[in-house]
Image 1 (cartoon, helix red, strand yellow):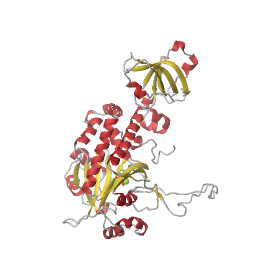
Image 2: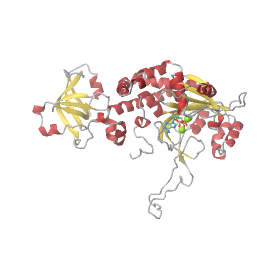
Image 3: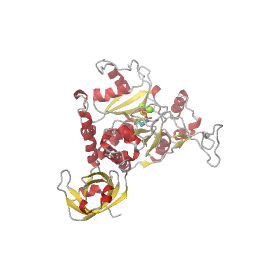
Image 4: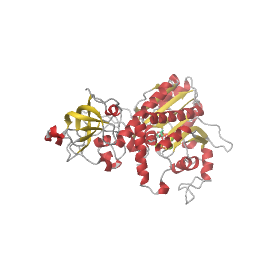
Length: 481
Ligand code: ATP
Ligand code: MG
Ligand code: MG
Ligand code: MG
């Protein structure tokens, strides 16, 4: 179609030419002014109809939500708030939108309400901005790795191994639709296996990624990941996207350096390439902050917060150092955490992570060398410390307002140590023989991490619920469409 995107027209400096735009009606005022949006940007273009020379029946069909094609002269606008407008010569309704049924006044709709109305959700300014930022971040991730010679490796969604221990899994079941087996009550009797073998939806591509890294050197995966998360939090989805680089010949420091560099690169890319969207999201937050009492308002706006993250080194400290800080900290008026850290070895709760990031250091934090007890079997074991405490070379990156955004580690490359640890943790070595082959044939130091893509989008957009940064959230309550 010979059409111009509205975003390009709004930047035009030459007037008088004939243009065609196609988009959806946002508003129609005074039988004259149509605000049209085609999704190319947040801003609408104004098309001015000569209502004296337009059919009454056609005017009636210009309603909010209708799809239109408008051809006319691009002229300088005399109205406030826009530089250009279109003097309509020809207007065609491509698709009607029944004004009785269209959910009007999108501004008043809450984010919760919009989650139920998929078609409207996509057309709001907020979600236009959020999903543009999401797109830019995804593109930046690929660009970052491609520029550094990493290979994008597609790891399987259906996996036979359930030993990774990252969370509850979804089981894959098969059904022969030509011969549907029924239970006595008529319901379908699904076979709980994949052609005879039990399989699950992947919770992480790491183990497969390690195999690839041990041949390609540097690889990354970026795909959907599934966890049957039972809890209803604002940070967990049942289906989320994860970025998992895996690098041969990396130690824990190299791993942290790469993760910090990646995060800063993609955040900067979004700031540089989505300035309109991020400014819109920032002002949206300012409005929200105004509703709060003075002492609860945040000091930094979204853009300052993102820039601060770019300009400062992330704080790096060990789990043991973090525990020492937490033990002597007074987080609030009650002067204690809800969940007290008494002993070395306990897992940190989100209140502790948030305290370290938001109150103590006031910047992103990388915690390293966690107790072996609370981390996965594949992490590189350290020598026990002078108290005999066992740690592993894990690293978690914690972000303000988000909590854990990255989880990673240097991997245990020594076969004997790995097998011993698997035995202790009841991880079945027979099922992971294909994985252990990497340690049998040319094992080498290597490391990697998982970055939760939606948590990254949350941080950059300033949204507060993870459901609102993915086009179709999958949680226990959202799975109808
Ligand atoms: P959490 O402690 O928040 O449950 P995790 O430690 O279980 O996360 P990892 O197995 O370390 O998660 O996965 C790597 C990253 O994937 C996490 O740091 C996080 O950014 C993201 N992530 C994990 N689970 C989810 C989820 N259910 N929804 C969205 N992102 C997730
Ligand atoms: Mg978890
Ligand atoms: Mg965690
Ligand atoms: Mg983790």
